[in-house]
Amino acid sequence: MSNHSRSTLIRVALLVVLALLVCLVSGCTQNNEPAATATPEVTEAPTEAPTEEVTEAPTEAPTEAPTEEATEAPTEAPTEAPTEAPAAEVTEAPAEEAAATEAPAEEAAAEEQAPVLLATVDGEEILSDNADLMNEYQYYLELAESYGMDTSSEDVLAMVRQYAMQGAIGTVLIRNKGTELGLNQISEEETAQIRDDSRAEWEEAVQYFIDAMGNVTETSTDDEKAAARADALAYIRDNYGYDEESYVRASLDAKVFNTVMKRVQAHVVGDRKVTDEDVQEYFDALVKEDQETYQDDVAAYEFYTQYYGQSSYYTPEGYRGIVHILLKVDDELLETWKDLSARLEEQQSNEQAESTEETAVPDGEESSPAAEETPAPDAEPTEEPTATPEPVTQEMVDAAEKAIMDSVKNTVDEIKAKLDSGVSFDDLIKEYGTDSGMKEDASRAEGYHVHKDSILFDSAFQKAAMELEKIGDISEPVLSQFGVHILQYLKDIPGGAVELTDEMKEEFRTTLQGELENDLFQTAIDKWMDAAAIEYTEAGEAWKLVEEESEEEPEPAEETPAPEETPAPEETPAPETPEAPVE
Image (cartoon, rainbow, N blue to C red; front, top):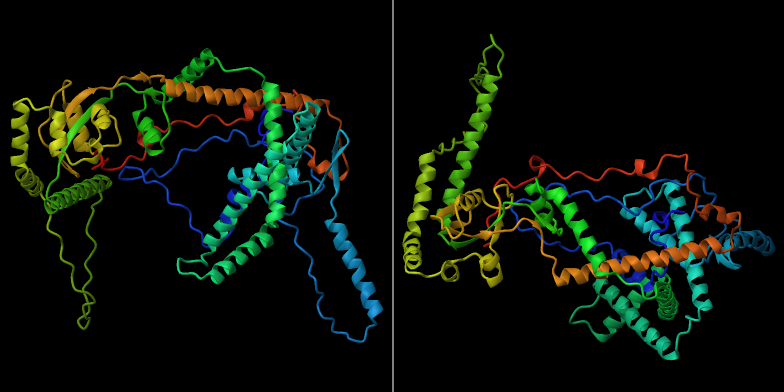
């Protein structure tokens, strides 16, 4: 059995509180809306998110057809049989005959719901209603759904059952190892604290359902609040099978096991720690990966780091830090210029398209306009003719731009005079600038990172930023869709690996230590599993993990999809008018 196929085995303590508060809460009402997500600070979002490679989901279906299929989500209580039989149309049948007819049906229902022995682990039985097994089943079922697998497929359900059984077996082995090592003792004080915590969590869950159902307002009476609580309790009981006591018991069991598991893991790990060399090696690998991805692809770098907020440990060469003074202009003047500019651009695009069409007419053929239809003498006009908009000329756009520049001329002259007298550009940003992104000292010290291939900025702003020749240079006023800018070339942004800070070192150390401890614990579990006496019943064969294929079969690496390619610049959905620094 590969480490990959059991990489999530140690997640054997899926707390009931998470099932209630996280996994199940989202389905408590039909009308809940998803939470709003943060809007990226760009004018047009990418049309496709980068596809993430699935690393944990098994890629092959089991080779044996399972003999039994789980039909219910493990966390839900079994559906109860009707308590009343339909009224019989024949009323003369003897009572004894009716009782004889009902008895076999009741016995069959009871037999159908009776737990079935699936496997034994060192003599300990795992039944079909085993709580750990059901939790694992629900976990893997949701995992399969998150990867887009068809959970109505028998192959997928077979896979879910098999991995769920491996998790349940792991739980037994960890619990037994805790007993063997004497690590399973929980004091009365610890138990009391766990109960108190579980009751508090129960109250949080109940309150969540009360709020979600919307039956309580600020003006609700005590009777209305009591009724709303009763409704929430009934909903939890009917849909999830819990009341307060059963929830606290289940939560207590889960948390006690989680405590024992952590103790066993600590025993296995001992004093093994991540070294400084491990941290540096890990960082160097991250840098190398990002360099291979981004060094010749600025568009992809900004796409993933800005649109999707991914970290990068490598910066492409060629970035410069730009600060600027954004002068607010009259809204009407700005909108007039933007409208004329957009219309002129559309006209030019249409003229170019028409020119292309005319060029495409084959030799010897003429492109003639369609014959005009002559309306019948008695026909009445159906619509008033639409007036054709006046064509926009470059002169009109230039005039609108001049009106804006004239409106800020006095302010621009003041700024230039103060610069000549020795006032720093930073002080002038504070005095005249209206861009909120330049309000903080840290942002002014760093500047906006602008590259000749950037996809984030207004084209006029970006062009002016890259035309500045040397550090310290200040631009003439530049008009963009956000107003008038005066830019300064603040500094060059070093390319290559980012600085490995102490904070990053500790973050990497924590990550690597967790991976180390999980790997050591997983290795120990694998050994315990190999040494354990595990026997499956006939009913449990459907839950038994299929053995790996022989070495003669193709290597798994050949079946693994290649890493996704970084989108080329032309494929990156850059906005038509990239955004300037945020106002």
